[in-house]
Image 1: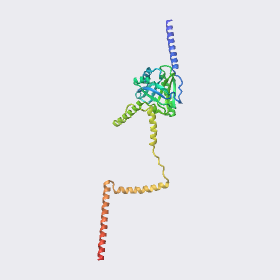
Image 2: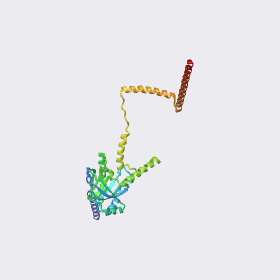
Image 3: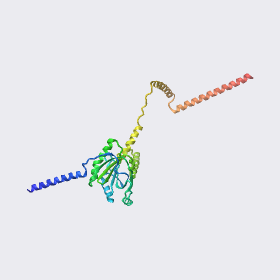
Image 4: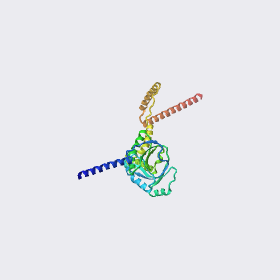
Length: 315
């Protein structure tokens, strides 16, 4: 009898655990449908306090916790500049922070000084009219993790299939929803100064390593922003480096070109026979000059003789 009770309790606990996990999965939105569209973004002009980070996106949780601990009522924001499936974890660049003001709201100066006191920097992102957007329910502490797991691959597939130039990936926790967007215009306006400084340093390091060793190993921006810029540059370079196809001339021109080519070939063979170095050419020039001098002297002698004979005849 006791064994039956123990087995019943174990079975009851297992069923309760399964039901709890199932309820949590549905509540967290992990199985919710992901809808990706192109249209107006969920926010307009915003001013944020942020910190620039470099490393695995899995470590961004501590950065969000720090930002939210300063002002829990503010909306959180994360901007991701690299594709983690194409870039190494330690090379992924992103910023995490809080939205200080939206649209035409005035930024709270006291709150801004508080963030700056903890090492945050302030920047404003402009209003855009078109972006690739999606959303995910924000119902628990694990919602950002579940949302990133579900939404980011869908956004990447949507952008890749349609050949769109949409970057960077922006995540905004606002109320009961987590908004995701990738701007289709003014992408450079979403670059923080630290990103541009890091790109300049990486370019300089790459050039130094190439000059020293002829090879470079380390973080290379091969995804996200750099990939899309490189794709545009590579297409331009490919157009510039395409081989020029010359049209074949008419038959009459071909015949004339053939005759000219034969005459040129004969002339070239004769010039090759006359000399094969600069020294021989110099010798030929000297000989010609000597011949011209001799001829000039001969002409002068003949003139003098003619003059003398004329005087004798007159005498």
